[in-house]
Amino acid sequence: MNLAGALITHGRIRTTEAKAKSLRPYVERLVTRARVDNLHNRRTVMRTLRMHDKASTRAIGEKTIVQRLFEEIAPRFVDRPGGYTRIVKLGSRPGDAAPMAFIEFVDFVPEARSFQAGSQAHAHSHDDDAVAHAH
Image 1 (tube, rainbow, N blue to C red):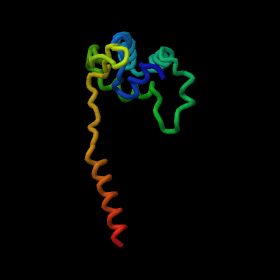
Image 2 (image 1 turned 90 degrees about the horizontal axis):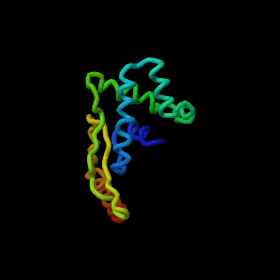
Image 3 (image 1 turned 45 degrees about the horizontal axis):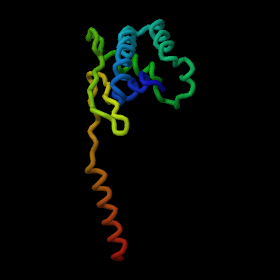
Image 4 (image 1 turned 45 degrees about the vertical axis):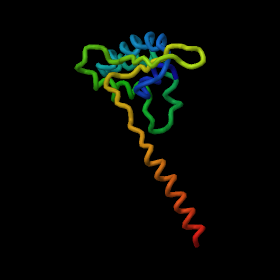
Protein backbone atom coordinates (compact mmCIF):
# COMPACT_ATOMS: atom_id res chain seq x y z
CA MET A 1 0.00 0.00 0.00
CA ASN A 2 1.31 3.43 -0.83
CA LEU A 3 1.17 6.53 1.38
CA ALA A 4 -2.06 7.81 -0.18
CA GLY A 5 -3.74 4.47 0.44
CA ALA A 6 -2.50 4.43 4.03
CA LEU A 7 -3.81 7.96 4.63
CA ILE A 8 -7.23 7.07 3.20
CA THR A 9 -7.34 3.87 5.26
CA HIS A 10 -6.16 5.27 8.59
CA GLY A 11 -7.04 8.99 8.41
CA ARG A 12 -3.61 10.01 9.72
CA ILE A 13 -0.09 8.76 9.09
CA ARG A 14 3.32 9.62 10.46
CA THR A 15 6.00 10.27 7.85
CA THR A 16 8.79 12.69 7.00
CA GLU A 17 7.87 16.31 6.28
CA ALA A 18 9.13 16.03 2.71
CA LYS A 19 6.93 13.00 1.98
CA ALA A 20 3.94 14.66 3.67
CA LYS A 21 4.38 17.81 1.59
CA SER A 22 4.56 15.83 -1.64
CA LEU A 23 1.60 13.62 -0.64
CA ARG A 24 -0.72 16.52 0.18
CA PRO A 25 -1.57 17.73 -3.36
CA TYR A 26 -1.86 14.12 -4.57
CA VAL A 27 -4.50 13.26 -1.94
CA GLU A 28 -6.26 16.62 -2.32
CA ARG A 29 -6.82 15.89 -6.03
CA LEU A 30 -8.16 12.43 -5.22
CA VAL A 31 -10.65 13.80 -2.68
CA THR A 32 -11.74 16.53 -5.10
CA ARG A 33 -12.33 13.89 -7.75
CA ALA A 34 -14.21 11.65 -5.27
CA ARG A 35 -16.63 14.42 -4.28
CA VAL A 36 -18.63 13.61 -7.44
CA ASP A 37 -19.40 9.89 -7.31
CA ASN A 38 -19.69 8.49 -10.82
CA LEU A 39 -18.09 5.65 -12.74
CA HIS A 40 -15.60 7.86 -14.57
CA ASN A 41 -14.29 9.39 -11.34
CA ARG A 42 -14.02 5.97 -9.65
CA ARG A 43 -12.03 4.59 -12.56
CA THR A 44 -9.81 7.66 -12.64
CA VAL A 45 -9.06 7.33 -8.91
CA MET A 46 -8.41 3.59 -9.29
CA ARG A 47 -6.01 4.28 -12.13
CA THR A 48 -4.26 7.00 -10.14
CA LEU A 49 -3.89 4.78 -7.07
CA ARG A 50 -3.12 1.72 -9.26
CA MET A 51 -5.76 -0.21 -7.31
CA HIS A 52 -7.44 -2.04 -10.20
CA ASP A 53 -5.61 -5.29 -9.39
CA LYS A 54 -5.89 -5.03 -5.59
CA ALA A 55 -9.68 -5.43 -5.24
CA SER A 56 -9.51 -9.23 -5.45
CA THR A 57 -6.88 -9.56 -2.69
CA ARG A 58 -8.88 -7.92 0.11
CA ALA A 59 -10.65 -9.83 2.85
CA ILE A 60 -14.36 -10.54 2.55
CA GLY A 61 -16.42 -7.62 3.88
CA GLU A 62 -13.46 -5.24 3.88
CA LYS A 63 -13.89 -2.04 1.87
CA THR A 64 -11.33 -1.15 -0.74
CA ILE A 65 -9.47 2.13 -0.51
CA VAL A 66 -11.51 3.52 -3.40
CA GLN A 67 -14.80 2.55 -1.73
CA ARG A 68 -13.68 4.15 1.53
CA LEU A 69 -12.66 7.33 -0.28
CA PHE A 70 -15.94 7.66 -2.20
CA GLU A 71 -18.36 6.46 0.50
CA GLU A 72 -16.85 7.73 3.77
CA ILE A 73 -14.24 10.45 3.21
CA ALA A 74 -15.43 12.50 0.21
CA PRO A 75 -19.02 13.01 1.50
CA ARG A 76 -17.58 14.78 4.56
CA PHE A 77 -15.94 17.37 2.29
CA VAL A 78 -18.70 18.06 -0.24
CA ASP A 79 -19.19 21.65 0.97
CA ARG A 80 -15.49 22.35 1.50
CA PRO A 81 -13.70 24.04 -1.43
CA GLY A 82 -10.30 22.42 -0.82
CA GLY A 83 -7.82 22.06 2.02
CA TYR A 84 -8.85 18.56 3.08
CA THR A 85 -5.55 17.65 4.76
CA ARG A 86 -3.19 19.24 7.25
CA ILE A 87 0.43 18.64 8.17
CA VAL A 88 1.40 18.71 11.85
CA LYS A 89 5.13 18.92 12.46
CA LEU A 90 6.48 16.57 15.14
CA GLY A 91 10.19 17.28 15.41
CA SER A 92 13.22 15.25 14.47
CA ARG A 93 13.42 11.47 14.16
CA PRO A 94 16.03 9.87 16.40
CA GLY A 95 18.82 8.28 14.43
CA ASP A 96 19.00 10.46 11.34
CA ALA A 97 17.34 13.69 12.60
CA ALA A 98 14.86 13.70 9.70
CA PRO A 99 12.01 16.15 10.33
CA MET A 100 8.83 14.14 11.00
CA ALA A 101 5.17 15.11 10.61
CA PHE A 102 1.63 13.79 10.76
CA ILE A 103 -0.48 14.25 7.66
CA GLU A 104 -4.17 13.88 8.42
CA PHE A 105 -7.60 14.84 7.18
CA VAL A 106 -8.78 18.09 8.78
CA ASP A 107 -11.77 16.42 10.46
CA PHE A 108 -9.69 13.53 11.85
CA VAL A 109 -10.37 12.75 15.51
CA PRO A 110 -7.93 10.27 17.06
CA GLU A 111 -9.46 7.41 18.99
CA ALA A 112 -9.10 7.77 22.75
CA ARG A 113 -7.06 4.90 24.12
CA SER A 114 -8.13 3.57 27.47
CA PHE A 115 -5.15 2.52 29.56
CA GLN A 116 -7.32 1.86 32.62
CA ALA A 117 -9.07 -1.08 30.99
CA GLY A 118 -5.77 -2.89 30.50
CA SER A 119 -4.55 -2.17 34.02
CA GLN A 120 -7.87 -3.29 35.52
CA ALA A 121 -7.74 -6.53 33.58
CA HIS A 122 -4.20 -7.07 34.83
CA ALA A 123 -5.28 -6.37 38.43
CA HIS A 124 -8.20 -8.81 38.14
CA SER A 125 -5.91 -11.58 36.94
CA HIS A 126 -3.85 -11.21 40.12
CA ASP A 127 -7.03 -11.39 42.22
CA ASP A 128 -8.04 -14.60 40.45
CA ASP A 129 -4.62 -16.09 41.16
CA ALA A 130 -4.91 -15.16 44.83
CA VAL A 131 -8.36 -16.76 45.08
CA ALA A 132 -7.11 -19.90 43.32
CA HIS A 133 -4.18 -20.21 45.74
CA ALA A 134 -6.40 -19.65 48.79
CA HIS A 135 -8.54 -22.69 48.03
